[in-house]
Amino acid sequence: TRDFYYSIKYICKELIEKKSSVSITNLAKKAIERNFRGLEEKQYKSMKQIFVEKFAQGIPEEYKIEDCIRDNINDKTSETCSRYLILISSTSIGRYILERELQKISKTSYYFIGSQFKNDKLSQEYTYKKLRRIINHVENGDFIIMENLDGIYPSLYDLFTLNFAKKGENDLCVKITIGMVNNSNLKVGNTFRCDILLHNDNILNQDPPFLH
Image 1 (cartoon, rainbow, N blue to C red):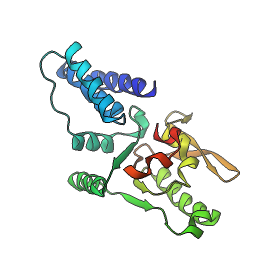
Image 2: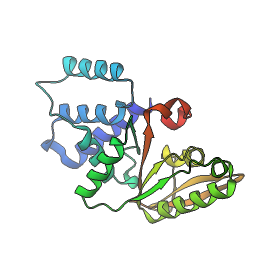
Image 3: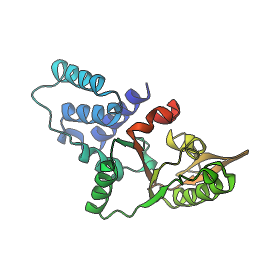
Image 4: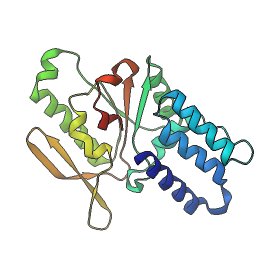
């Protein structure tokens, strides 16, 4: 349901902004690529094939994964028309592609990687310090990359799902959970974006709501 919802939001946004200068067929294909690419490969290809056979007039323009990543980077959280990106790969190629696209557009990014030490994983102090740094970048509207932060992702669930509350005319706020404390008034910068790097072998260890 969420995949379909954001596909429609993306198409409507593009039609309003670009009006008659854009092909609806290509827009719909982009929406499918952006929102349903997380399905298993067989399901995804089957869905795309059905779209081409039933609705596409001619062959839609190719929408490469690099284009998808670049468009997601350039989106604004304030428009809430696209979710943040989880880039899943079996090697470090995901990080390489992401960093290359960031360099192409001269985008400054901040990288957070979780510790592999057992004591750090079990330490509330470690989690709190890492989360505080992430929160600062959320408020500043920065672009951040996260990897191996399984203990922190649940605290950011409302942020990942764009479950924002509006404060005033333009400010967006979100709830962040730190232990037993909820911060419901965290301001989200309009230009904030985040991408998450996830190794293919680690998918089954993630909570289903997080992957969604």
